[in-house]
Length: 41
Image (cartoon, rainbow, N blue to C red; front, side):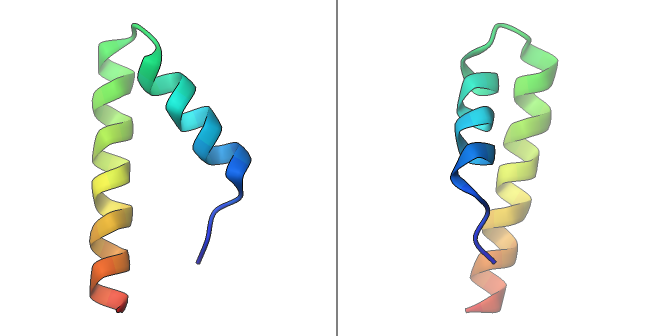
């Protein structure tokens, strides 16, 4: 499943934001997505 580019752009913007709690949440989400991708292949 590919996510639309807009969501990736939004995630990058959020990663660049100064809200550290938010950053950690997004990093965890990205890790989960990457793990799912790896297990699907």
